[in-house]
Length: 305
Image 1 (cartoon, rainbow, N blue to C red):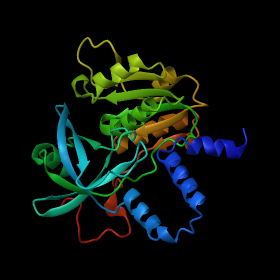
Image 2 (tube, rainbow, N blue to C red):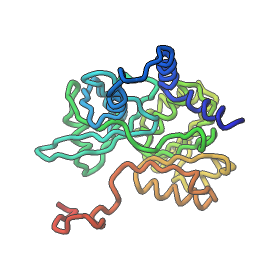
Image 3 (cartoon, rainbow, N blue to C red):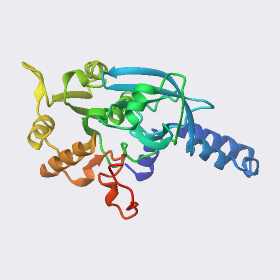
Image 4 (cartoon, helix red, strand yellow):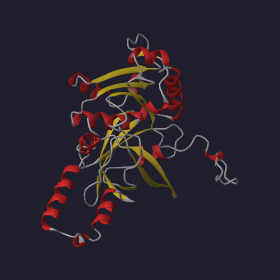
């Protein structure tokens, strides 16, 4: 297929591309020199990539005993588009302390009415207890616009997608799955979901229903701390288990999303199977593992403060 044809096919999958082409064609018919569109580009960029968004919590959905999904709507105008797999930085003030945390959007980019942020409690955490215990419907929150590079690239990533997700890593994977299914994209989507306990698996009923409804979506559940007499897969996503589940790894694109320790372990297991680093995508939106070891870390500040 010629490159120009391939590029056009890819662009046609971008939400809003066809509308932009129609506007361009209409302007060309009038012979406009675009002086009447002064500042239009800057204004469009500001709408698509705002520095800050004021969002309102329209609904709080309890997913598991440790996880809630916050449905956020815009307080003014339409929400900017995003790529499935991207995140927003959420700004909060907790007892006088201003801070921010990145949270992946778990809703589908095919709709622009709201963003869903799925938040799992972090033991001894600072922000997640605040969100889960103190934030209420109707409350306003400040965030950045969508950002991040953890998304599917149709040119380079192929059509055989394997997701290794752990815990709250379900959020970006769920958005990408919904995007594939909503747009009926011709991809094979294998979702391998690792959780500690069977009663703390986020979105499990919805995932099982989608797997029954769509032939191109396969769901594999793995529990590391199963109850007695559990009949499903158990253990950790080591190389042997991954190989047995996915078979030939050569033509597949792997996406790893979950806690940092989960990233590191899965990446090492994939590399041991011969998966090239370019075919492993890691969701790494959080802080570095040892920020106090960075060159710019204030020496007078202790990590224990």
